[in-house]
Length: 268
Ligand SMILES: [Zn+2]
Ligand SMILES: [Zn+2]
Image 1 (cartoon, protein in one colour):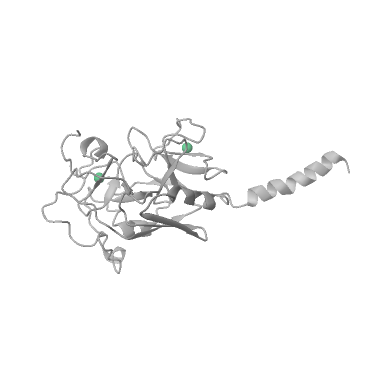
Image 2: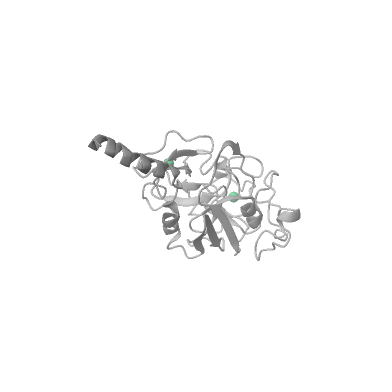
């Protein structure tokens, strides 16, 4: 046997093995690092699911910017470690659409009236604010969470796909983002490549839509997913049955508080 044939024979099984291997075998060990150092969140992996437990409160300072007060919750969110990319996109609903690695929820870019929330709402110094249910959240890149590293994993959308800072690992700013604010490349955590979202300074700021299957359980857990124009109503029926969360979505909003997401006046 010539050495050339031997090389081919050696190489073919290796290629087959690479193709057959779970695409994201390395990922599960790396994603947990992103949660480290954040007091209010615990991330664990069981099987191919990433569990994110959080009380929903930021571990950075907040300022009173609307009549609402951040409340402690008790969320257990579940993300598939190998989320399935869907050719069809799914619109994001009102309420939470994902969670940052500091345990804070993030929302879509709209106000209750369908306006650009970043332009029409008021935010604290870390660019978050509580809604009428006391759920602290971001609509845009969380300034206090970004640490300046390129390709920083900062959160997960509720379809399980990760959300990154402005840049990829090589320092470049993506120019090929789709309508969901995502694209496919390798990342520090997913060396084999994964579809992922990026934060942007322009609309939609975080994610514009889901490109994977939304994990309905996460919407139920956080009281999000309402289709109404920003009405932060708890899910009905099965969604809320047996799932009353202390400080969570169950119950009525504080009397006198304006609906979350309503314009609170011009930005400072
Ligand atoms: Zn990227
Ligand atoms: Zn908001």
